[in-house]
Image 1 (cartoon, rainbow, N blue to C red):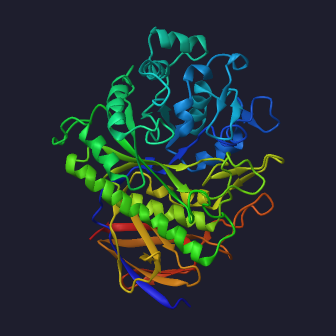
Image 2: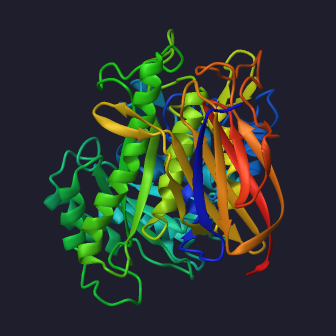
Image 3: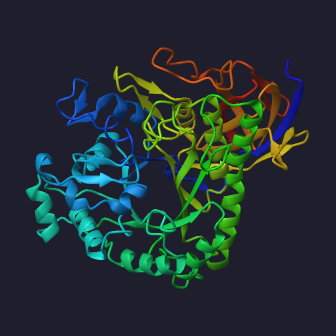
Length: 512
């Protein structure tokens, strides 16, 4: 039996801010085999597809109910000129993808293909505009092309290319990593450009755009502060902020320095804890960037958008170093669960997040085998699937009461139990991560304010810390029923295996 225990107090009758489904967003860049060989196989491929878009990838992602998809980058976005990706595919100009592998891009996947993908997925489009090498006019015309309904010049051009009705584009990015690959700009320069470019990303035909300015990397709180100062007055509680409505934050988890980030599958127990400690650092980043934003925006009219997050390991041996292909283990799954707990706790300010990336790149949901065409769902995919009940649910504060086990990692204490919870109607959902590499744990869920009419639980774990899924062993890490849940005088008692992620679904009775 487990030798350690903890108590988690959850007031089921005191719901907090709504956990936006958009915290479970995704990211698809023209990078490696994310688009080509991932989403896009072409209409002549023997792999089943709809208009060139791979059917089994769509089916797997629809099961996650992915709320939004960011495209075309990333660094690629600030080299991308959208007119090169419209019209007959065999007539589209080519370009060099200088950021990712120095390969030639034929632009066969462009605006129409991306919007068709979003329609197949049933997801919202998050389009990233080019500030680094593009013009204000180019960005203005793109949103017109996408969303205008009448006979304007860009709407007419869209119809010439086969699409009569406009699309809905709820989210538009104003540049990407402007401090680096998006132009190497100083924040004062970019703040002015963000105001200018955002002004010309107009609302057409009833399409309301949420504009997201390229924000900080990691702990660059000055970048956030300068952007917040660039807004108009935000002391009122009503109305959208302007000229943009959100700012982004990028943060990646790795165990080594930039030039040797760590291995995806071959790591020590110490590196296990370093990765999870650095993932848990997201909570501090959200707190401190949020505090900066609160000084200028006390009513939280500006959203924080974590539109790049996840693990970044050294590429798999024998693969193109510019394609960022890495395996995905149980460790990655727990990195994801720790991030989601942080996002849930900050749901009053964090309005969207996008894991990097969806297929075949970095911390992917799906890996596709280039030789056999086999599709593999990663451990991270299963965390997203297990967490779908949190979408648009009300957050519940989850207080871990002593004894709370922790481990000292890089001079800081890493709590070995990560928890978050939410409720929606007559149901609630509790997420529990046991980060201890070796020790099982018993957790008492002290559930207050509502009766528990029923419960069920799932767990994601495996025999080894580096267990991962392959075409030969596609379910080495997959959810299964968690039997170690029973009633307790305070609510429920849960036995968590070592190195595991579990979710407990509650059927709630009437309010007390």
